[in-house]
Image (tube, rainbow, N blue to C red; front, side, top):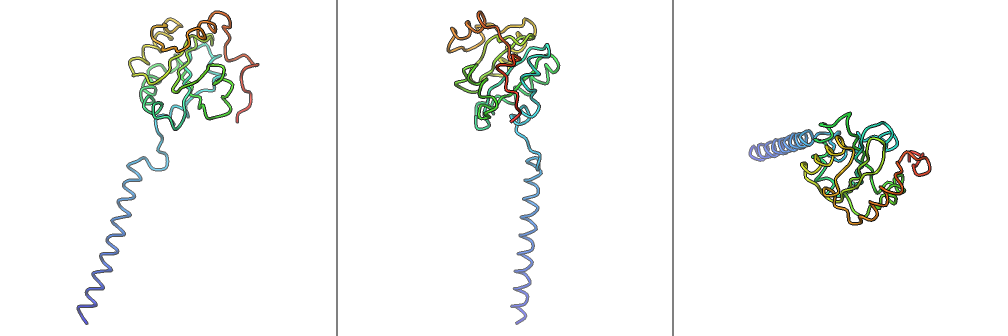
Length: 189
């Protein structure tokens, strides 16, 4: 009978130990991953992003990244974008527009976003200068942004334009910026 009581006591001790060990492990993993406020680099960029209306009218060059939360290529490029954003803070604006958000549908159509990530470049006057489609290295991104910052343009050799005629027509005939009230969404959906 004494062996049965000791066996039950040992079983209860093991159960309590396993529960405590499980809670400790779960707590460690929770806090190791950043707790409730864990943000991916893409989430951080999007959260800190200016509204395109503001960015394109404040006298600074602007890079607009069209992205999606589910896009692995966008996620891969996000840490580089954060690093560059820190380098050019108050010199170049970085704006993220989620292609899955209907609020930006008109801009997605206007800039013929047919793949992501797509970077669209605008000079300090908000005039479209070109685009880049696909994942870029930090060095490539830095080259684009430094050229935009220093020269107000992005060299054609640096961008991967699938439709150069579209790019040229925008630059030569339209020269419109996003602050045109006819093309900007005014609601904040």
